[in-house]
View 1 (tube, one colour):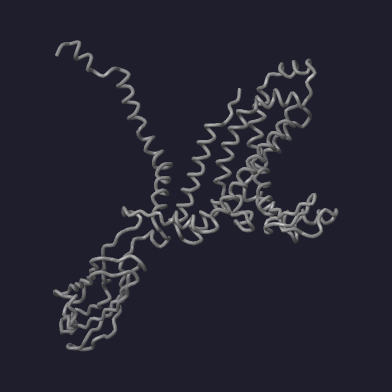
View 2 (spheres, rainbow, N blue to C red):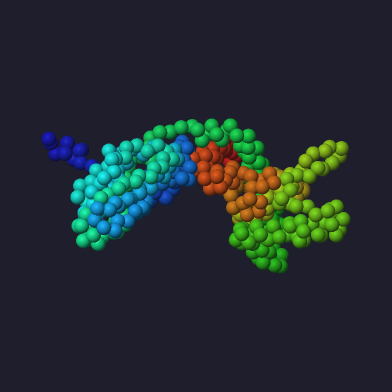
Length: 425
């Protein structure tokens, strides 16, 4: 091989630096996988398995020892009862083996073909146990003088029992049973509809409030800084504090909203804003059911998260050149025309980004609705359904399947968004 060929085959400096960079970043990749990707993969894995809360532990045989008859002299009988059961009601345990170390001087007298005894070691091969299996195994032993000479107690050592059983979490058996159960139930599609209502209107409401607040505080006036700080309060305050404040104000018996509404004649009676599903409304000759609780939690969502949109929109407002507005004023443009033809086109990019972020976060929101209504009165979203299935009903597989459906819906939304979302200047 010539020198030129050796130099050609030798890795370049850039290749060596890239390889070194990958080696240095490998721990970071592993940490990201462990923290972010592994829980996601585990959720997908569980969603294809009928896992209940009781299945988190693999099925095991359980034994408890009881001495039924105590001998008093050599030749008397020692009777021991082993109370055994399968911890699982569904899964079979194979090759169950019971072992126990007993005092010296005992002879097994029970005709039990599954059990044998060598000196002090008892061994019982119990075969397979179906789900829910129970058995009381009574064994009698003849005592000798050695038994009383040792002064040992059979209960000094605990019996040991073991067996092999498939673990539903780690086996390679997968099923669509959880997804079939989700779509077959009648509450999934209404819950999905409520989730979309809550997400879309909550997202649009928070952006509109943020846009209004940014437009209001985009001019200088005394106390502007203080007012900007106050506008951030709903976002930075603990969610449990503001949720309970809203619950207290909207309480039908002691809340200020119902009391003031009746005081000024706006309400005929107290309204349970967080506990009433709907009320009948007649408007311009049309009658319909107005969703009270759902509208209330949507208003809470818009109020609590409008400061996030407010900060981004205000920053974009301040980046728009003033020359554009001055030129528009010279041309005789009204305030509405300036907003429509100058401000709004400049805000398209940031508003579309805010809609993406707020849609994802609101779609996955759990704590707000759970603290306000617990998902009652027509406010149950898919995230609350995940909690109900996984923890309230102890059905982890179905809960994980609902989470996968959430992921699929968000993935479809992202594909549509990146395909058709407007781009700002």
